Length: 202
Image (cartoon, rainbow, N blue to C red; front, side, top):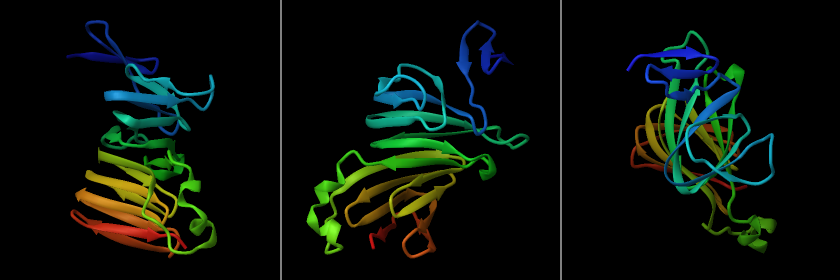
């Protein structure tokens, strides 16, 4: 199907219009299944339901605890390909993309369970539980990183998940390879399909 790009949207020859992302300014979110909620950085307070493709500003918080979303972002010109996509689900995250990051999209995981659930041991640095406070799963092609409290996971064409727990941030790789940056131990670890890595809480 032929199309023309004009004023930030792609118009097909049949008159349909789709939003397109702008590098380091906006991404396009499209609901895939279930219920996806978004909280815009500028606008009404609280979450609203995502009902169709929509360009949103960086800083938007996305709730996929009951759904799955496709995220499309732009790479810096003249990068090839110009766009990259991923599907994300299972958690709440904030979308960021730094102009100096060569197109890297950072999805910062938000807790959907209060850290008070970890109890007194968390506050006193004693033995911590494995209770999950926040998580996010993704299947993506392109430059994406998911950031938890104690580590980040950077991917290229991978099926992976990150779980923020009381005892640390756990990265689980189901396909491909993930580069995990451990914030506590200041080291980088290569995690392959079928492997996990726990960046333990200090």
